[in-house]
Length: 221
Image 1 (cartoon, rainbow, N blue to C red):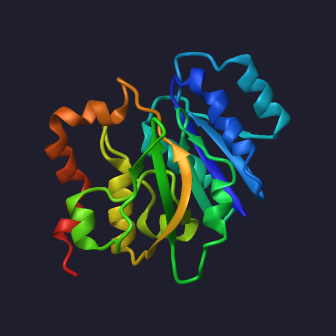
Image 2: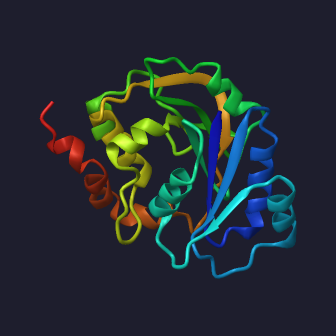
Image 3: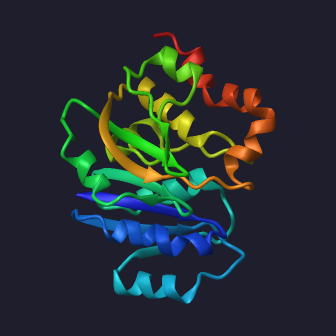
């Protein structure tokens, strides 16, 4: 029913916890781990998990960035519903099921509550429209979406260097006709790191915000 795409790059110390949170989800699922050419080896416990739980493991021959890694995982998925997870984050118990029971045919993207340090940091619970998407990213990366909308918009946009890939993806999904649905349930815990992508982007935040929203700002709706 669901393909869970976990992307990693030198996150071995977090990966066991992340994968365990995927394995523990009480749903019909496949788990795909995409290694974006890490320079550090994967620890033995994770290698054992990959084998024991038949996790599909794909390694890039060169580092291509998070967008490319997610696209690789989704291209190799066999399910219509997709959810991604960064390797240093983890799902709450039964969180994906809480999204699944709220899946309706008229909606394409399903998102819930995100925590960091145990405190709620997301989401925006109102209607997601063009004005909201141009202002800020209203939802975080681990949201359930249909593979068909990913195909329709051409997947995650691959750029050189860091960027707000999730925000840009949601903007393009909206332009592609996607309808978002909020689910009042805890979904996952986001790990704050000093070397995180968001911290890297922050000094030039306005520049990267403009890149993330360029299509939706320029679109004539």
